[in-house]
Image (cartoon, rainbow, N blue to C red; front, side):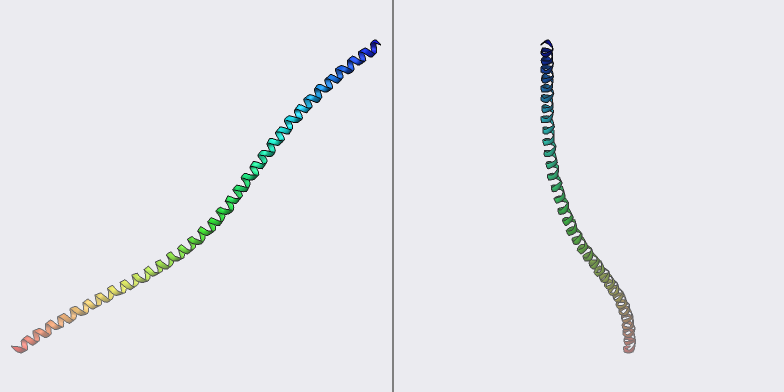
Length: 125
């Protein structure tokens, strides 16, 4: 009988220990589940953030393409304007040269007129 009581007491202690271990394991399981839930929430938040960043990237790439197209147009316009400016500069230079030739011819004509006028005055005398 004494052996049975000892055995029962040992089994009761073993049962209490097992219950304590079970409670500890359940507590650890709850903590682990909470950590998993928090991690899942963080993953979802990071996925949303990633989607937003990817959308911003796509938008930025579209904007970059648009800006590059506008830049190309402006560069073509600039090249055309520079070409036109060069042509106008050549035209101005040609006009200046023509003016100088005309002034030279005018001087020659004035000199000839003065000589002719002097010759006419001489004729009249």
